[in-house]
Length: 93
Image 1 (cartoon, one colour):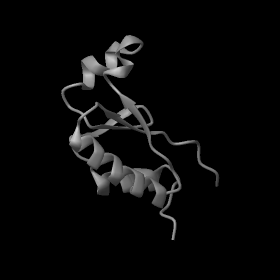
Image 2 (cartoon, rainbow, N blue to C red; image 1 turned 180 degrees about the vertical axis):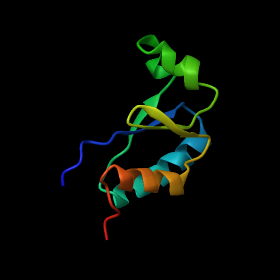
Image 3 (cartoon, rainbow, N blue to C red; image 1 turned 90 degrees about the vertical axis):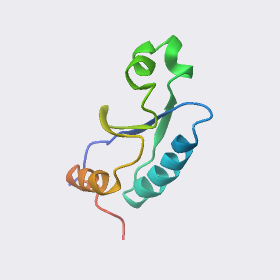
Image 4 (tube, helix red, strand yellow; image 1 turned 90 degrees about the horizontal axis):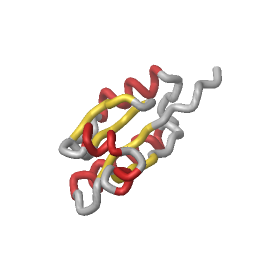
């Protein structure tokens, strides 16, 4: 069964060390499931997407799964793994 493309996005901002840590965790976790992570800097995106900074700016890093908030401040690894499997992305062995 072929699954639809699952989107994993990390909302970040410059100088955020927690964001860098979250990106490391997400990159490894997504690679295990055959996915990649996209990043959006909420400050850089503010000109075209002011809603991102308004909604998430004080909670970065924020993980969005298929456009919906999944976790913030840290990656909820167990829940994300379960949600990726449920979307048809089993862990690569």
